[in-house]
Length: 122
Image 1 (cartoon, rainbow, N blue to C red):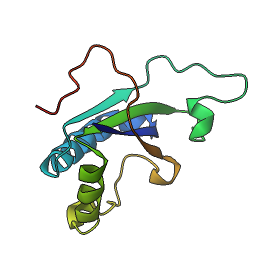
Image 2: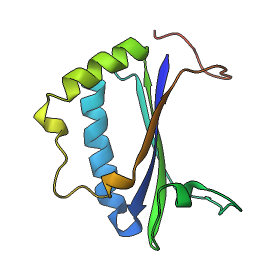
Image 3: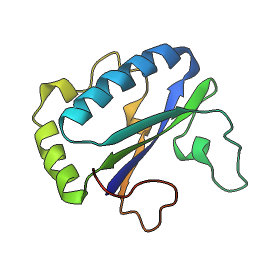
């Protein structure tokens, strides 16, 4: 299992547009072997003393934070998919993207501990 994570600032007024974009994007990632995709809309994102989600993405007034992750079978499978995705014009950044992709934070992680979820790919 391999996990890609994202923190995305999205204008609150773009909630429905983001949901539609996320659903369409998830379908494409699933085509390339992604096992699970979760997009979660801000409900309680407190400000921190030194750092927090809002500061991390330079969120502006009126923007909400989306916390998203993808679960892949493994690192090799995700990297192979990324190579193919880079060639797929359906993944080109659209002009009407409902958020500023330049402020999106992403990273990929190897799980070191899990509770409450099957760890197999079955």
